[in-house]
Image 1 (cartoon, helix red, strand yellow):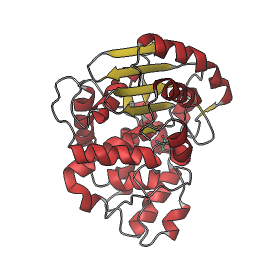
Image 2 (cartoon, protein in one colour; image 1 turned 90 degrees about the vertical axis):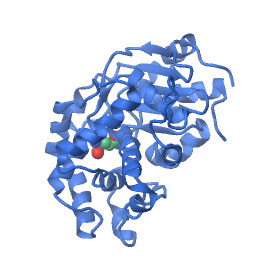
Image 3 (spheres, rainbow, N blue to C red; image 1 turned 135 degrees about the vertical axis):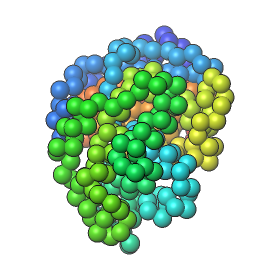
Image 4 (cartoon, protein in one colour; image 1 turned 180 degrees about the vertical axis):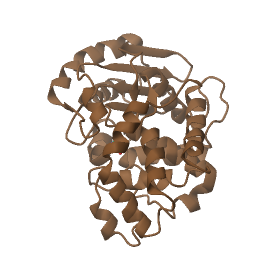
Amino acid sequence: MSLMTEKDLEYWLEHVRIYANNGEVADYIPALANQQPEINAAAFYALKGECYTAGQFEYTFTIQSISKVLSLALALIQHGENAVFSRVGKEPSSDPFYSIRKLELEDPGIPLNPMINAGALSVTNMIRGRDSDEMVSELLALVRRLCDDDSISYDEKVAKSEMETAFLNRSLAYFMKQNGIITGSIEELMDVYTRQCAIKMNVKQLARVAAVFANDGRDPVTLKPLIPLTVARICKTFMVTCGMYDYSGTFAINVGIPAKSGVSGAIMGVIKEEGGIAVFGPALDEQGNSVVGIRLLEKLAEEKHWSIF
Ligand code: GLN
């Protein structure tokens, strides 16, 4: 494996930026439809603590589905494996992330995994707190520790925009409430879920989160444990099996690293014993993955022999 440099990152991002023409910005959340497809950025946070950047690396975006990894980590920390996996499964789905159909097929209606929307809603429903504000605070506290940055927060406009239009996610939640998997107020759950998806970061902050996973849950600089080793391992395994939606199998062959993407156009990737990478480019392919992000990770994985397989 050859080590990453800032030059590599700049070179390959420049090389793949043209692929933005092959994708479309997500528009089912109205506030995301305003994103500029030509924006791109990448950061690599090495385990030694240096962070390399390329493109518009100060640009902030909402992390969307990447937050599913973080809410899962929190639920596992708060409740342990047995409780969490009584309300969400461990199997890949091969359906789009928003799909509802397997909920009816599965007995007893437990969503297949925490990386699809149904599973993520079930996980978010487990976060401790007397109300939605407390639940969001719990999650933000964890995310701020991972980023080593107390300024991390969520984008109110994006959260509100999704809250006003999340009819399918509400349907998933009501379906699971009917089956006793979700409890409490669905509107309150949606309030937490839309704010968690709207957590705002730049690629440097996101690459640091990935670096914590690359470091088995420890702070890459101080080595302090931030997430228990087993929780980090479970999260990384889900990133491999389901992190790139219904493209996870192909991604495992072409790239071969634990990764998670979000419909804003962000992807975080975990490079074992080396560091964390974050890529942003809002033009998406059919599965909802950043086209520039996928291309960049493919190129770098090939150049640097990143595949864990
Ligand atoms: N907030 C988005 C949703 O629930 C997240 C989906 C995603 O990033 N794939 O639809």
